[in-house]
Length: 482
Image (cartoon, rainbow, N blue to C red; front, side, top):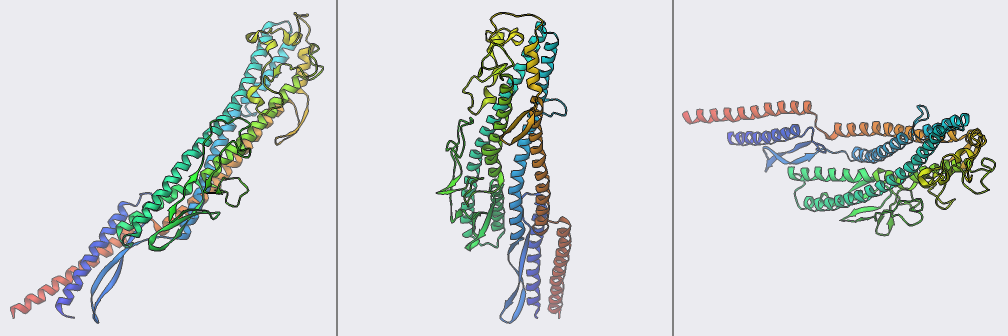
């Protein structure tokens, strides 16, 4: 090899070492940047004719592991679903209350029984009668409030679905635009790697809402398909369709046609459906489950407890002044038998002064025309007997024989069990997702220690190439002195 060849080879080594140092610096600077994928310089020997002329950079490689990324995206969808479900049931369980500490609906049912027993002991006392009325009002207000909470949470889920559809549709359009940019450039450049990182970040956003996979296409482009096989991007982005609703009463359901599902063209993506194309997880999976299954089921169970309370205190034999079919202490101002009783239940107007009634009718009967004997506690005793006797129930997922307090405690227990179950799923899914993320980062992320070791090797190579040029220069100088 001639001296000129040695100088050229060393010069190419210096250039490549500078580029490698630049890439290492970029990696270290972005070590904590979300979605950043480690880069490295692709090198190739420079050959002119049959002679080696040094080294050259042929591109920038972007570390990747398609299998690990796909698994991490799938678990991200599962984690998003589990997080929403656990949060929703934690809120519901907390709001319903806990029978262990006597809070919520159970506590108010117990208060009603306690005040009735006090009134039974002193039927002539107006103060104890007012205490019963206050407890009854608090109980009906709690039923109304819980029913409204369920309706509000359904409305919130529907709004979040609509917002999520807008986010996913925009993300799909962004990926289409990034595909177009990437396909028109050299995919071995730093600029292309940065665009691919951005495209993966946008794709991760889509995977939070529903499970998807990326399908590699020519020229560095990707298509996006759901786990069930529905293309959301096939060259061009397809838009998900959804129509929000303003009404979420017990009669508004997806199966009944009052609420919207998810569609792409003529393909139904609605989670929970029986179609092959129904999305199985992600935020959409959780939000549709809450809107169309869990919250309506909770509302129905709440109606069952309210219906049981009305029926207990309206039973024949409790109040001699009422006839069969007339309401006792609690009334349904709507159409009896219609869903949504928990949102309508109220204190019978006959005993509520605020509605034109008289509180002494608690003692003397709902239809009593005038006050009776102050010491008569037969109606109050019958009410207590009705509340504390076992009554069989088999509907809306509630089965067994319960007293009124036991039934409210059972509702609280069911909500608590759902909370615990969803929290267990969240804990397990979170651990799996963390493991998948760490495995992916070990293959594609930046290990600062490893990068520092590479930088030392680059420094040594740079110094060695510089020394070759220095020695060659000295040799040429010596030749010129001859």
